[in-house]
Every structure is written in structure tokens, then in C-alpha cells.
Amino acid sequence: MINILLTTDPISEGYVILITGLLIVFGALVTLALFFNYGLPVMLYLYKIITKGKDKKISEIAVKGDEDFTGEISAVIGASIHMYFNEQHDHESGILTIKQVKKTYSPWSSKIYGVQNKL
Amino acid sequence: MSVLIFIKPVLGLGANINSVDNATVSTAQVDISEDENVFEGAFKGIEKFYNYTGFANATSGHIVMIFIGIIFIYLGIKYDYEPLLLIPIGIGVIIGNIPFVAGNQTGIYETGSVLNYLYFGVVKGIYPPLIFLGIGAMTDFSSLIANPKLMLLGGAAQIGVFATFLGALYLGFNLPEAGAIGIIGGADGPTAIFLSSKLANGVNVLADGTTVKNLIGPIAIAAYSYMALVPVIQPPLMRLLVSKKDRKIKMKPPRAVTQKEKMIFPVVALILTLFISPSALPLLGMLFFGNLLKESGRTERLAETARTKLIDIVTILLGVTVGASTQADIFITKDSMLIFGLGAISFVIATMGGLLFAKFMNLFLKEENKINPLIGAAGVSAVPDSARVVHTEGLKSDPSNYLLMHAMAPNVSGVIGSAIAAGIILSFLG
Image (cartoon, rainbow over all chains, first blue to last red; front, side):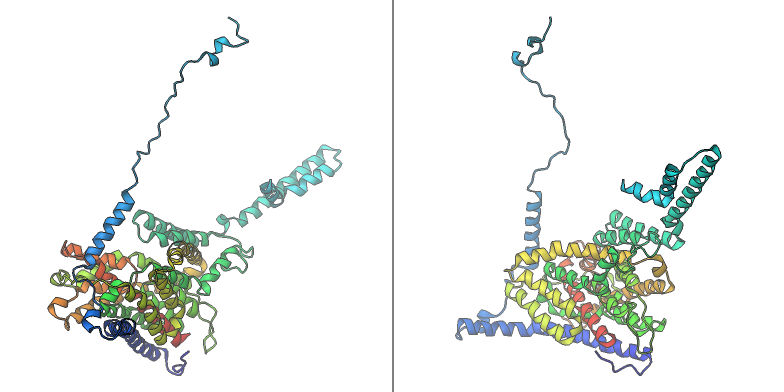
């Protein structure tokens, strides 16, 4: 931990932390941005050279997305797949009905033919 | 039966009834005096029971907090403002403000109570990294990788953190407390809880012998409240600071990012950011770990658990316990009111910082590469709400301008930026 500021007043320490803090946050994010702008293509280039041989031209192996295949196209494809999976089940009305079951007549279940029946 | 066993001694009935059964009663007069004893005991028992109820112990503070809890629940259900957070927190606020007699291991601050055990995860900063694991497993950093310069907008919004920190110092809070309050401007609930649990936990002792205040509850509630209110706070600032012409700027669609780049991102970002700010290790370590689980393509099961079941479980525990930590006697203080005020200001400054920095960046960019300054507002984390707000505002100016993908870049960068800021504050003041 950094304990270099204990002797000054809190407000002065606050200003020091504000300035250094902002600089560090920006420094970290700028480093990341620079790495992904410049460092990563170089890394991938080196990787390709190591794995695929040195005779490849840079233009062939540079990190390059398909220019025509934009994020918007992938978003549309994603949305349509999502909609497809969400709407493929059938929608039911949600209304429950109880239908009266009519049984066909059978003398075997008829009460008038029971053993105890008295006419 | 168990209810009877509890109520009988409380009402003072059991002993009297037994004594009546066992006594040899010979005259009517004795009967009357025994009955009087029974009634007297019963009333005393009822009075004792009443004194244990919430009705006897309720204060105006409890009622106010219960009302606030109900408002949270109402906002979550009726207006869909971050319901996954506001509903657990709202019910937690009600749970934490049911009045009770202390000493029965009931309240969240009573050692040994169930709520106290669950609160342990907040006090020791266990829940926030687990939440970050889930966030990492559900975040797609493609837009950020495709356009790395947008990372700077996530840094610009952190000015809200440091400005609020300074504001809190001017209002009389000591350094660690001010640091914890400042992180509200990061618009990141888990980060706010993590930092306040380390700096303003009511345990740490300063060099001059004073103990820091426990501000975890007010800070967490303020952070989550303002995160939920992003759709209310940000649009007026956007309209105020960005001209109609600038709001219509259409950005170039981001390029497609390869899977290899997505896999490399968490590893490199983990190493670079944590070498700069090691104190953010629990947060950023878990964030990038979760992201690698998602992008590696080999650990889909783990990623699925992290972004669904695990984050859900932790969100429930975190929400309820943070809500319950707002016990009226601890929560309703002048400090809490100041924290709420500072929180609102920090959100405003963070949003303004992002918007203005986006305009500043445009000064150096070619016409075809200009960015829509609205996406600067997404630099405050609040994923993905602030990106959605940016998208909606963009559509209002031009119905064919889709900013969501672009806004996600500063949005996720804001998460990284606020975690780095928390690490820096922790390394200075921890």
C-alpha cells in the first residue's frame, strides 16, 4: 500500500489522488487501446510466421475481418435466430375447457340390470 | 402445537393453570383470587409479548425505510428499472427494518444471526468478484476490440469518481470514507460494495485513532438507485451537451472481430491492467476469467453456470443483504443524505465527462471516423442500461442511427475503468 501522503492535509492528498488516479486509469486504458490497435496485429503476424512458414506476405495474413460482413449484418442474423428460437413453439390459448364425456351405452354398466334391482 | 408451547409461557398462562389444577380449592373466595391471578398473569404476558412485537419497537425511521423498500419494489415491477436488483434490495430493506428486540440473534448486525452470516459476503467483499465473474462470462468485448480508441471514453467517465471523492473530502468525510463514496460515480454496484467493504466498513482504524464509519449500506443503495435511474438522469444531460447535428453523426459499422482476438483479449487485458493496478485483482481477475471461459470455446459449461445460476444466486444474496443492512438506526443519518447527494452529483459529472471527452476526441478525428458524442455517456459503467439509453437517444435524433453496438464499447470499458479506479483508490487508502 502507498502511505506516502499521511503527513499532508486530506484535501491536498485528495488532489494528488485525483490527478494520479485519473492519469493511471487513462494510462491503463491507453495501453490496452494501443496494444489492440498495434500490438495484437504484430503478435498475430508473428504467430502466423511461426506456425505457417516465413514465405507468407504480410498482406495475406494481416488481421482483417471481412469488410462486407459488418457488425450490423451479424446483429440482424443474431436477432433473426433469436426470434426463430423464441417463436418456434406453438402458442396455446391458455383457456381450459372441461368437456362432458359421453359414454356409449352398455348393459354391463347399466343399473337396471343389477343383482339387487327391484322393479 | 409449537405455537401453543410458545404462547402459553409468554402469556403467563401455563404456570397459573397448573397451579389451579394442583391446588386444593375449597371455597368460592379462593376461586376468585386465583382467577384474578390468572388474568393478571395473562395481561402481563400479553404486555410482554406486545413488547417483543414490531408494533412496540417501531420508530418513524423504520416506517420511512419500509416505505422506501416498497418504492424500490414498485419501481422495479411497475417501471422495470433494474428489477433484478431493486426487487431483492427493496425486500431486503423491508426485512432489515422490521423492528425487533435486540439480543436474540435476529438482526443483520447481530453476530450469529442468519442474516449476519449472509452479510459476511458483503463485508468481506466476497460477492462482488463473483458477480464480476458472471459479468465477464456474459460480456462480448468485440465492439471494444474493433474500435480500441473508444476505451478512452470509459476512462473519461471516471472523472466522476475522483471529483466525488474530492467533494466528499470537502464535506468532512475522512480519506477512506471519501474514497468509498467517490466510487459511486463509477456506476458499478459490485465495485462500490467491494471498495466500501474495504475502506468504509466500520472496522478500520485510522492513524489518528478514529474508526471509519460503516457506509456500505448507504453507498450500495445510492449506487444501485442511481444505476436504476440512468434512463432518467442521462438523457437531459445528453440533450444539454450534444448539439442536434452531433447527435445525428453516423459511425462506421465496427469490423468483425476474429475469435482469436476475442480469446487473446481477456488474457492480455488481465495482465496489463493488473500490472498497473494490482489492488483491482479480485474484480478484474474474475471479470477476465469469466470472459475467457466464454470465449475459449472449451468451457461453455462453466461459462453458462457463471453467467446464469452463479450470478443469479449471488445477486439474490447481495441484493437482500445490502437491502437489509439499511437498518433505520444505522442508515437514516446525515451522512447517508450527503452520500445520496454526492452520488447524484457524481453520476452527473461522470456522464458529462464522457460526453465532453467524446466531443474533444472528435477534434482530432477525420470526418469519416468521427464518433457520435452521445456514446460518451455510456462510459459510466451501468452495463447495459446506459448503452441502451444512448441508443434510444440516438434513435430520437435520427431513426436510422443505431448506436447500441458502438455504445457497448465505452460501456464495457467503463466497467474496466471503474475497477481500475477502485484499485487505485484502494492502493492509496487501503
